[in-house]
Image (cartoon, rainbow, N blue to C red; front, side, top):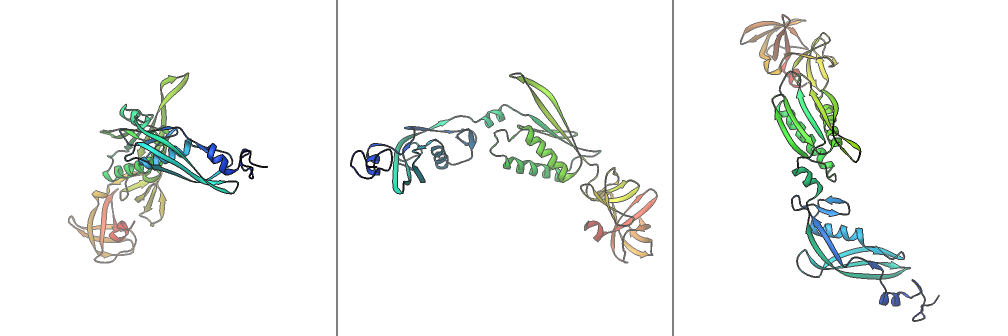
Length: 332
């Protein structure tokens, strides 16, 4: 087939590549491209999503999403270069590739404008929007600062993973006498956070919901995820199913009878870790040790091995003293 104009071999739409490029286009893009940026968070709108990009990257992604090309144009590279100084102004959109084996370059000159518009995330955040409350409580004790730091770290990590989600935010944090409440813009993130807290710190999770409103005939609910941390902390002495244990981590303890691992299911705190006393072993036999301390010499149940001069933690429970070697207790 020959080119209808010059008679050379036709490549595209009945024309050779040279005649086609002189008269027609291989790519099309709007003469004016509007880049939308949120004035509060600085995110750019690309398609239907708001993204954390710089201006050049946002413009490039926007152009890539809206440029149209001829079906025979195999694009290998896209370039967007400014023709004027500053972010706004005239740009050239250059596409490099080939048509039926012929290397070609197609260019469009466009005007780029910048417009401000508050994104959905910032609009919701400023309005106090929330879909779920994650309530953190602890049984029969206050939440420790260390536990709260773990919770905040988990929240930040999950929100970072959900950065493309316009509802991935905490709109409010309320500290109460009994604990702390986090208000989440997305109920699914609230669910993820609460499950992760229980996984890391232990405890129980109770999920409930309450009708908030109706939109277009649909019921809209707000969810509450009540996280109940266990009554014990690592290092506390607990009683579980008749066994005296030292809690070591979430749901796990060490029996002081035989140093076996115990799954803590119904543990009750019998001695807080800060209530343990310190002493030094001055004598021992197969079952007991004598411990010198500020209260004098006490006779205690021997937990594990013991050596004269060894430091121990000891406590009294149910009219008996227990002595735990410092190396064992702190190495738990």
